[in-house]
Length: 94
Image 1 (tube, rainbow, N blue to C red):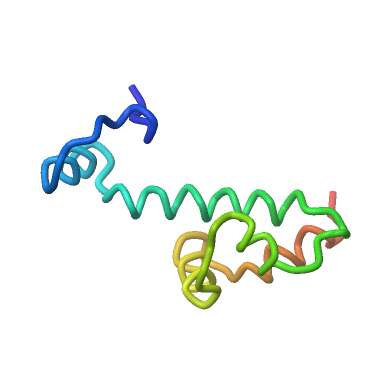
Image 2 (tube, rainbow, N blue to C red):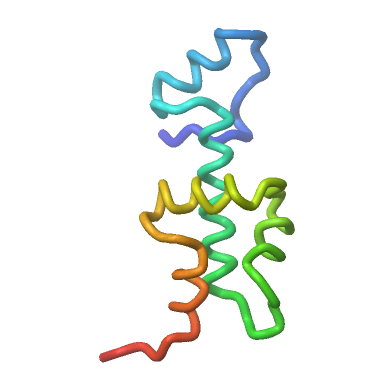
């Protein structure tokens, strides 16, 4: 069974953090950040030429500090957002 953030019942203090960390091995905030970074990565990959920048997509997804966004993105995906941006328009090999 997958635990979704929408199924978490509000519990005060450390109990909610412990209940979340035990099955997922992460905190609720860390999990939400990973979900947001994944959403931004998918948006970058699917973006059309009318999207002007990665920053535009990041801000649309709730990122407030672009430097931290880039560092977190690199930590999870092993590359910078700009690399994903350039790869979306690169010709695909066979």
